[in-house]
Image 1 (cartoon, rainbow, N blue to C red):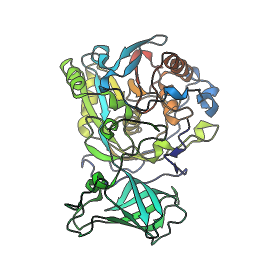
Image 2: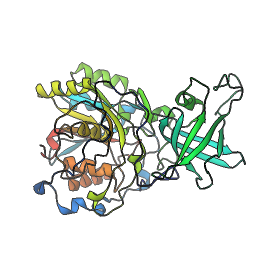
Image 3: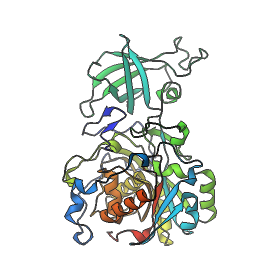
Image 4: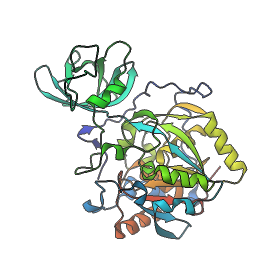
Length: 414
């Protein structure tokens, strides 16, 4: 399975800008922090780790999860607890696998109903995937088919399940939503769409009436409710895909973790088009990540520093949290940050903040597979994947999870 396409949309190789968000006033507003190549540690990785073909593996089609576990925390959990050992548990066992004083860092981004189905004035069907808001109610979007959508074209959308009263666009008399194509975006091959929304209103709340949650392309036969593709702690709208490691948490499990002395902290990274862009060049060091917008608050930085001072461990919930924390520490020390990052983590990377990781199972040849390999080693990770396949684990966004404890990681830090 290759993440080149997102439900029929082809992704180009250039970056897109950040969404219109209001950052914490205490944060740095740098757009891109410096992203030097990760310093090499020859003893900890081999030249094979830098070749794209080294990140391939075969996954039986039936191992791709089509529906999430119910309840969420009943999913399976492969626990990697040393350099050579792993066990099979259930996600609801997490409180007993962590220590009092540990800190879980979670991504509170919220998935938008970013897929819209409309028609041109000619009646031809158009599919739209919103990527980010460039200006108020003006969005960058992937469109299908795109070649015939020239600047000036108008797309009309009907609300799904519309009963006639009241109009979600009131005070507009028509219940239809319209968008005008302003220009083509060369970086993504998408279009800049200006939505006709009543004065004082935003498109985002209207997406509940007009939009659909955009599931990944490998989920083709899902019975999951859209809410199952949203974390229970999502509060900041802006993502087009869920931070899937967080989908396993329930309110009850979060409460149990708190009662056992495990701290919770939050960052925001809006999962965007960069997540789905494939690594295409054989030399992975030449891959360029799309920028994704993130925010690490002063409060979260203080929680992390306090945890570290008390010998607690920093456990990232998902690869998006890894990228957020490590990007905020790219200058050598963790600091509050709001902006975009192009940080690409692969074997040889020297870790600054993250000590452990909760993550789902990732696509072959993906940058996410390379990130996890940087933590525990590529060969070890692929062996664990084979063990998970043999044990009938469920893979990808709605599948099972892996907990990598600090005792299992390669000791490769500044």
